Image (cartoon, rainbow, N blue to C red):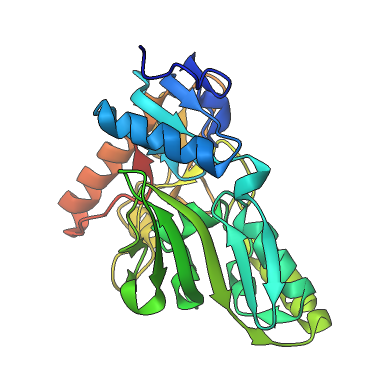
Length: 292
């Protein structure tokens, strides 16, 4: 019996992935799964573990570059409603791992809960945001999380308290296969004031970065003492490009792709910038985008 027998209703083979990522490039997934229920997800992960199949979880693809060769094993999407619920209880908000972070921020503001609004404009899902501890210069998503439910690669579900997790700059200890849901402990505030603050933050971020635009992605983490964009500009690389991939003029830490750009173009541009920054400034830039 094939490992996929009985799962054909949500598992497909040779699935194109370019349209599922913000950079709109990259090869297909050998197998692509969209489980509709928790039972489907657990059964799938357990079968993959038994067959020693590599498994990846793909959110909305805002921080992922898929190589032209595509992905082996199984790529899972948690787009189903079962993984996207949002609920408010007092000063806390609980959100499924597959829901967009932006939706949670809006829901929190509407309920008069402050904290997450500083993250407005950051793309991605709750699960992806927690894996990489998304944030800006004032706060990170990990500052507000109180509890997380995860699914490990053996198909076991566990709950992690705040004390069992650590968060640092653009990284976290929450490295299990999937974040099923997260609870955020927030602070009460007028929703009118929160809405005004979010609008101001959005205008400022929109002016500086390609917030919400697709065919773009952030390349590097900020080094100590300056932003990655400032570092790249100081090295004289603001106009660097490779094939259909070029750096964004208003923030050269973002790559912008033309319609005919390939994943190889992005990888070469990233490598060239990192090498030249190292040679000219002695600064070692750390990649922010995930390359699969």
